[in-house]
Structure formats: structure tokens, C-alpha cells
Picture 1 (cartoon, rainbow, N blue to C red):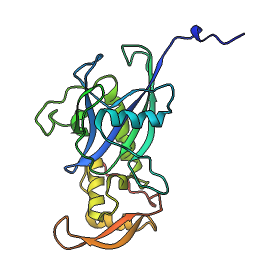
Picture 2: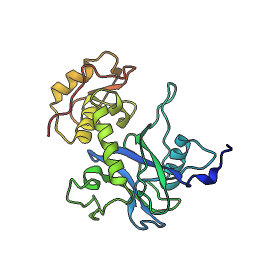
Picture 3: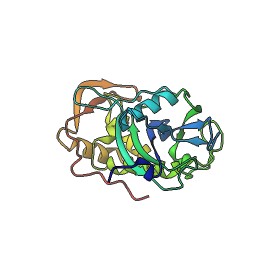
Length: 251
């Protein structure tokens, strides 16, 4: 029996992006204000429809650039860039009022990213603390504007992305994706503290992250950018797993 496309209901595929960075010692996510229906005027994660001539990763990179002016890169063995990975797929029948839409969410992590520039169909773009976006704070951002609920099912997607980041830095080198190419142990510790929302003991943290061979590699340089005595600079090494894992404290 020949294949008949009209026998199946149409649906679309989108990409949504959970873009996380650390700003002002807080874990922050990128959100855009929607310029078109549905949910016009509401804040949402950046993203959009996948074109018929592009794969999912290309669509994710294009949407991020169009809506914010940011340019993530997928790290490889030759070049460093923002960490990019698929997060999860979301396909509830009623998640989009326009039609049946399946979204493939991506997680993007990078060091202190610049202020975003809204473009495409976005009316505005901003960084906001994830605690505020997820309802864990008083609901107001740094500019005093109260944070309304995110459009679509984007709060769930953001929550899943934050939890992915929190769990993976326990055992992997993912936390270094929030750092510049050269960083101190103290700067790396502040990443863990921002992502987990806790305060860590500096000596115990130093012992754990320097105890795995190849996890951190000394560069031979020092810096005083954090004040005080010169601190040793490191870069991420070839070891991708932290052994033993550094379990997040109970809060």
C-alpha cells in the first residue's frame, strides 16, 4: 500500500534553548519577550521552528543568533566554545495552541556572556536569575521588573535544563564551560556555588578538583583579578570525569 502523507495529522518541530551562564555570582538563563502570538508580550526561552533544510543543531544555533545576537559553538578537539547538548524532547499535545508541535530542547553553557540583543520575532531579550524565573526568589529581577510565568511549557524545560547542569557538574568537567579559558580554583568554586546555590568550603573544594589527575592543568601563570594574593591559573584538562564525584550538599 503506497504511503499517503495526508493520512497523518501535520505537526511541526521546534528547538528551544536553555542558555545558562553565571552573572553577578548567580546562575542566569536567557529569556526573550515574544513579539508575536501566541503569548505575545510574555517571556519565553529563545527558539523557533526547524526549517526543512537544516538539522536540529543548526536550527538551535540559528535561532539563538537571530533572536539574541549570540553565537554558540559546539566544542570539539580543536576549538573551544559554548557547550551545546540536546536536553530532552517535549511533545504534549496541547503544549502549543497553534498546532501539534514537538520541541527538541538544547542546553547551552558558556562563560559570562554579553548582554543579548533582541532580533527576529523577539521584542526583547535579557538575562534573569534562574531562581527568579523558577519562582524560588521574590519574583523580581535585577531591574526590579516582576517576572511573570514563562510562555508555553518553558518553565518545565528550564527546570529540566538547570537540573541537568546541577547534576552533571557533580561528576563531569561541565562546570569549566562556565569559566574563561584560564581560571582560578576560586573562580571555579564560585561556579559550583552559583549553580548549586550553596556555599562550599574552599579547602575541601580545592582538594577535590585538584585530586583527579588531568582534571585541571596549571598554566604556569597567576592572577590578582579577584583581589588578594596572586592565585594560580588553571585550564580544563583532558579528564572529563571527576573521580570521586563531588556530590552537591543537601539544602
